[in-house]
Structure formats: C-alpha cells, structure tokens
Length: 306
Image (cartoon, rainbow, N blue to C red; front, top):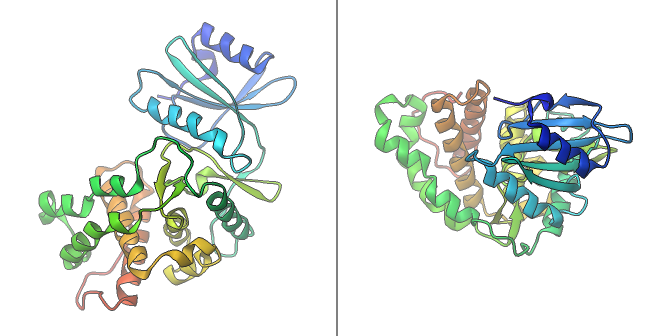
C-alpha cells in the first residue's frame, strides 16, 4: 500500500513541514518506484521538494538509510538530499526537486548521449569507491546463483531455450563473481525509471543498492534495458562502447554479466513480480544468445529466445 500525504500521521507531516521550512500546499504522487511507503512531490509556496518515505518497521527501510548515507558522495550526479526526518515510526528523505523526464532509452533517443555522459561522470566521481559500508557486488552475485537454483528446483518447468543452455548457464554464472569485482561505487540498478533528464543532464536516482564493483557494471546493466527498449544486442553494446569504462571489461566478463542478469530476470518472471518482467526476461535471453554466439558457444539446437 502506498500512502497519501493526508494519511501520514499528523506529527510526521508537521516534522516534514518543519524540515522544509514552509507548509505543504499540495502533492503529486510519484509514478515510479515500488519500495517506498510514500513518495510524492510536495508543493509549497516557495518551490517543490521530492519526498520518499518508509515506515521504520518496513523490512525495506534499510535501503532508504543506505541511500541517505551514499547521497553526500554524489555531488551533482544525483538530486541533492536536503533533509532526513525520522519520527513517529517513519523515515523520510527530502530531495531537491528537478523537473524533467525519465530517460528515453529507445533507438534514436536524444537522451542516449546524455545517459552515456552521466555514466562517465559517475565512474570518475566514484572511483576509487568511497569508504561507505556496502556489500561487494561480487559477494552479491555469489549469493544469487539463480540459474543453479532453477536447475536444482525447477528443471522440469524450464522451457526449451533454458533447457538447451542450462548446464552452460550454470557454469558461466559460477564464474561471474570473480569477473565483476572492482573499486567503483556502482548504482547496480539503473533503468530508465531512475535516470532523470533535466536541462540536458542526466542524474541517477534511487541509490538503494550501491555496491563496490567493476567500473563497467552500471553500463552493462543499461545494455539489457536498451535491448528491452528495441535495440539489438549489437546496437546496445555499441552504445555501451561510448562509455570508456566498457572497454575495461573482457568478453568473458560481459558474457558472465549477461548470463547473471538474464537469470535474475528469468527468476523474477517466474515469481510474477510485475507484467513487464516477461519482456525483460526475453531481452536477457537475446543478450545471452548474442554473447554465446559471439564467443562460439551457442548451442547448436535450441528453442527460440523470447
């Protein structure tokens, strides 16, 4: 359940208005994001503020705390965190409000060069990784070997595409943690929905999952999103090549990343988290096939991806 401003406890609303320094005169609910219990642009007589909040008893509350911890390091690469309020069982973050739009990742979009420039800025600013306690991305992948999980528990329910490649996917997935380690503080969850375009610049929002990782991993995350938006895998990787960090990734590392992310999308699709995950899983399969074919490792007989 997402709460409305008027449904928040009175003492919480009073504390937020004190942090802003003026009364809230109206709200506009956020249209993206699924973690927060409350997320909206707060209207005031002297400018707007974006507020996202979570009940402290919510198991996801740690993500808001982590985001608040990371934000001072982002210096212009993300909307400024202006205040944090914790009261009445709620944790609320107030951000600089930037009018704009979510990045358009479709082929031919004028946003694509700005997104690439933002990735360059993030790598430059966050390498070496600042001393923020985060789980290394390699450790996260080591704990999320989802192709192995599906092989052990769902093998009989897998389709022809997955069955034809399963042993190979499990093997490649196992090597991935050792290929994504690095010394950049990465966002790790970039998508169009958390890339905000304002005055020709792109800022990354929703820093709930930062991790120390190889400098190319955020760019790789967006390769999948570009494929989902209509790019071919080759076109998406060519776009990635405009980000210098991409050239530091070996072919095997990129293939391993593609296999892991395809496993994540396949697993989430099976859990039924959201309707759009079928399309993301299909995009992951197309990327995997492109990588395996490029390396001469694609199975000779297999079901069609998608």
